[in-house]
Length: 258
Image (cartoon, rainbow, N blue to C red; front, side, top):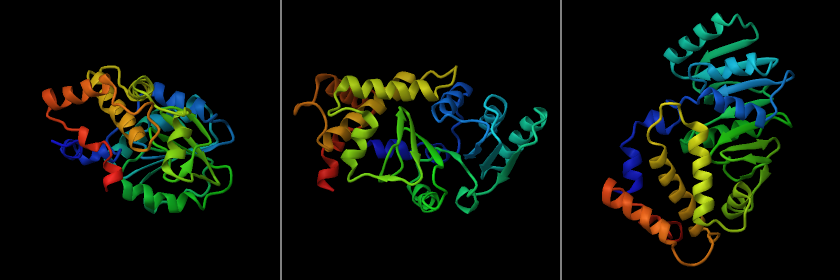
């Protein structure tokens, strides 16, 4: 099957970011990366069980933390957690993030891959006050040059810096003039380690998928190192096809053909 068909076979709640819960160490890395502090009003869009809200309050002492999630069960879990911690400077809302006002935010954590959600949220982001920080994971906000990158964590600040094209944006994220297999694997591994849970057992498979996606995107944009497909890339493409019935090879030059 093609990679799109494979992804389509996964629960849509996972693909949209609604069922992904970051481990505590990832939250702490993100908050250090964005320099979260006592003057900040922090919003976690898609807050899940509230662990990010709890850590922002307890470890980083934010002025206020707000968690929003469309899943009522998760909001209930978050309320229970924060009540046990005896915090007072927080709010939890069971709403669609596209319908919520967060104009007072100074820092926002936003990790969604659903394109419709991202497009809707971009319209809200551009109206935020100057200096507001928006953290994404893996991918930058569409059409924007990041202000700071510690892959897979990416920071954009209002007002956004516009990218001239996708190639410029990709170079800004990876910080190199060309992407070879080693670079693709390194960045894929950073992502896997950043979001992994302690009992995760599919790290290597996820890293293979992500490294191929990174390298193929770079190849299609003309920023891969060299003209030939590296043997390592060919090997992993073959492994996915032979043992997992997943085809990614057709993605080469797909953007040029579409």
